[in-house]
Image: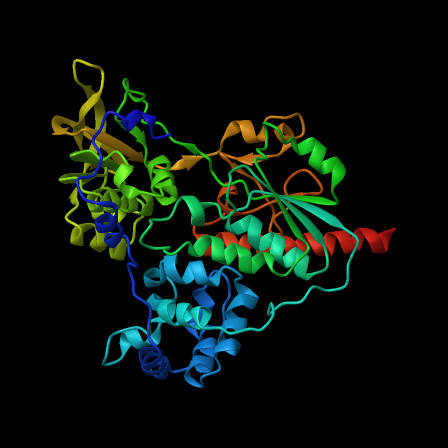
Amino acid sequence: MIASLQHLPQPKASSAELGEQFTDLAPPLNARQAAIESARCLYCYDAPCTRICPSEIDVASFIRNIHEQNINGAAAGILKQNILGGSCSRVCPTEILCEDACVRNHDAEGQPVKIGLLQRYALDHMTFTEHPFQRAASTGKKIAVVGGGPAGLSCAHRLAMLGNDVVIYEALEKTGGLNEYGIAKYKLTDDFAQKEVDFLLGIGGIEVRHGQRLGDNLQLKDLHAQYDAVFLGIGLGASRRLGLTGEDAPGLMAAVDYIAELRQASDLAKLPVPRRAVVIGAGNTAIDMAVQIQRLGAEEVTLVYRRGFGDMSATRHEQDIAKANQVRMRTWAAPKQVLLDDGGKVCGMRFENTKLDGAKLVGTGVTFDIPADAVFKAIGQGMDDTSLSDAMAATVQRDGEKIHVDSHFRTSVPGIYAGGDCVAPGQDLTVQAVQHGKLAALAIHQDILSKVEAA
């Protein structure tokens, strides 16, 4: 994946020095801080923070448990709704969800309760002697889950809780999906993604098979025939293209590919790092890419977006992280041309200034160049069409690029369900993928029981 950057130098800093650049972005609360922060909660009736939480965590209840020093009670309440609550407490954009809804924003203090950090505190300090969830009596049913990311893991765990046996088919070497391969290294540290997977699998009844890629050595029609139901949590595996000549030249690559390599690197000092980098995009992935390449030692990093700051999908908090890390941010500019040197390698990007003509974004005809040794595109992900390439998969209805599902995450093919980033509804958030998986599991279980009762 990173071969297109092999001509670039390695970082000047040592591995130990670079490691210091990727420590925890948001240090956890200690016991005293957690006690003080939990005491700030008003434990609202019909709390707005709970109403806005995509995974329906009872926020006021778990914070009250922390205040009363019932840490296991707080953790159990969180995990009952969100089995990946540990990673969500680290990566969820609480600033636009529960903390934005906190009533404390409107009192004299004007500061929300630190809900994300309190959730992390509860899950980091739980002390269960055995797995907090026990499996129900066996149903004798077996379900295939394709994709070991947040949606697939959540679905598998809930199905196992309900007494079903589950096989997760995962294309990559590790389970975890974006939590393992796609999140900035400073957000999920100390191999947390794998520790969380191990905890989740501790309930039993879930088998994971790696190296299984749908549309390659795994066919949907075979799974449909072999299992009582199939859940697709395949995410969006294809990076969108700029559509420019020179897009495949050495020095230009998808940001998600570089982030995956960085997260798996045993020695950060061996990664290729440009002196000057351009990141094209406006979401959290673009911010993660820009900040991380800056921390690896790039001297000049510029993030470019075709609209204004207010239109960026990255939250204001994420934008502030980029600015604090000396990332230059240029708006109202669209990529126009990949600039190549005499050897055919990337040496910069040409952009065209943009403006709004009514509701339509148009170019102004004015261009400018940004010199760069590497360009990273973070303009979104699309469906990898090879995933749904067999005869049965081709019959699965789509909404544009994504899979169409009903309100119970059923696809157009009976017995096949889908959730997470690969389906039409949603905001492409980890916490929402977890909720999709959980709700899909409940629907699958109910549908299977209904069939048994009808027979």
